[in-house]
Amino acid sequence: MAIASRVAAPDSGTDLAAHVDAFDWPQITAELDTQGCAVLKNLLTPDQCRAIAALYPDDAHFRSRIVMSRHGFGRGEYKYFSYPLPDLIAQLRPVLYPHLQAVANRWNEAMGIDIRYPATHETFLKRCHEAGQARPTPLLLQYEAGDYNCLHQDLYGEHVFPLQVAILLSEPGRDFTGGEFVLTEQRPRMQSRAEVVPLAQGDAVAFAVHHRPVQGTRGTYRVNLRHGVSRIRSGQRHTLGVIFHDAK
Image 1 (cartoon, rainbow, N blue to C red):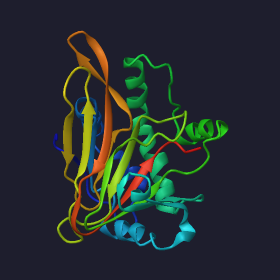
Image 2 (tube, rainbow, N blue to C red):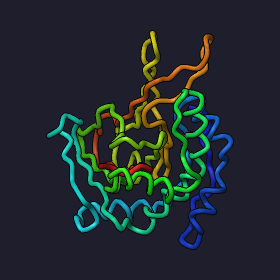
Image 3 (cartoon, helix red, strand yellow):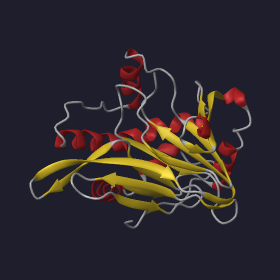
Image 4 (cartoon, helix red, strand yellow):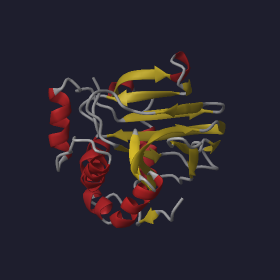
C-alpha cells in the first residue's frame, strides 16, 4: 500500500467538509489509480467512532438487518440505516463525493463507459431516486470472533457510483484482533491480485466498487474488484460503510 493520506483528526468544533478538504486528494487520487484503493487517516475521531458504533443496538436508526450466514455472505451481521440518516453519517456522503466524482468520470471515460456523474451528491441521488433506487445504503457492520465477510461488490441497482468508503470504528488490538480489510483484483488472462489494507480506528479506505481502468501494453483494460474482511480472531469489530448510490 502507498503511504496513506493523513491529516489531524477533527475535534468536535471542526467542520467536516473543511476536514475532508484538507486531505491530500492528488495523492489519494494517484493511489486509487494505481492500487484501486487509498487510505484516509483519521477521517473520524475515536469519540465519533464510538458514537456511531453505539447506534447498532437501536433499531430505530435502521431499515433492515442482514445476518450474513443466512445468505452465504460470510459470518456476522449488518444493518442499513434508514432516512433521515444520523447527522454525521448524513454529512459524509456529500462532503466525500465531490473529491471522488472526478475520478469516477475519468475512470468511465477510460473504460469506454458513457455514464458521467454530476458535481453534487444531491443531484446524483436524485438520479437514483427517479430510477426507483430510493432506499439508503449507508450501513453499520458488526463482527464477533470467528466472523468474516466474503469477497463481494455493493451494486444495488442500475445506477452505481464507482467508488465507496469504509471507516473502521473499532480499535485494532484493543477491541478486536484479525479482521483485516481485503481487496482483490481479477485481471484478464492473469491470476488475481490481493491487497490487505491496514486501518486504525477512525481511518477510512476509499476503493473501487466494481471495476477500474488499468493501462496495459495494448491499451486500457478493466479489472474487476471485490472486497471483504478476513476472520475476526477475537473481540468485536464495527465498520461504517459509505455507499454513494441508493438501492432499489
